[in-house]
Image (cartoon, rainbow, N blue to C red; front, side, top):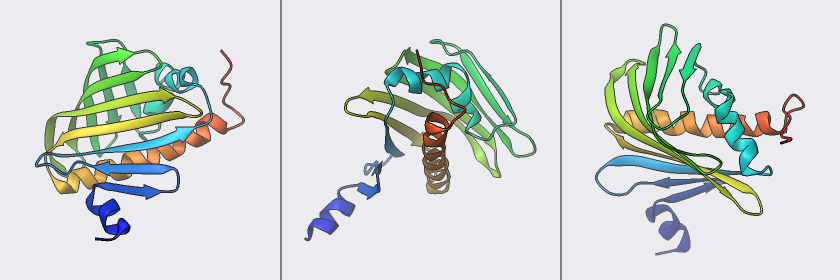
Length: 165
């Protein structure tokens, strides 16, 4: 088996600085990572001020970024994403129960999103999304998270963003 085959069949795909790891067991899920040239606190600030959640494209956003706190993203005429924050470790990790209704798909309850922030030479953000019920939903979520992480780059490096402490 060639290196290329091992790379693909091993569950990993690399696109530029974006890495996607597909869950190869029976449950549906994936992890996607992207690195940014800013400190972890600048990335966590995007969650605190709601900027990260706005990148979902929701028309109405409410959230209480504390363990046990709730969140709700309403997409007018399309659907709603809501749930609760299971774990919040400033500058390091956010874990959420992620429930989806609408979007012309079956209702989903209890999917799990874990966002890890790891500081090194650059700061890497990894989004793991697990317990997804269908391949169609997994594909839609992978596309959405890829776009959100790419859009985050513009927010972090745009002239309107100030990453000072």
